[in-house]
Length: 57
Image 1 (cartoon, one colour):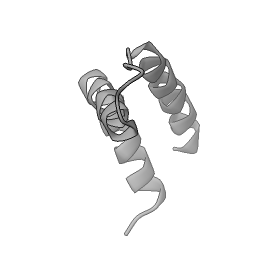
Image 2: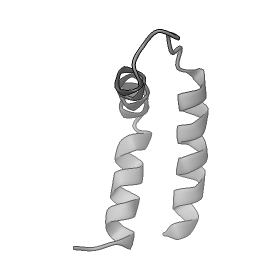
Image 3: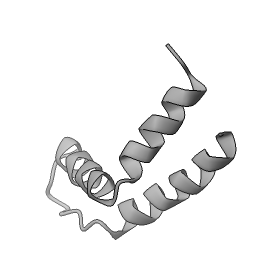
Image 4: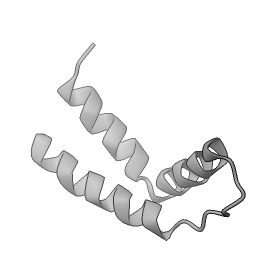
């Protein structure tokens, strides 16, 4: 399972680096845009699932 997390994190980095972030936007707005892109790609859900499997409640 941890081996699956690294590729997902790399994918998330690739997605995040492609998001256009306006210079005058506040940090939370930029974070929201990146999160939306990760959600749209599906990688956010993948990472959540992998982390949940690694750290069960």
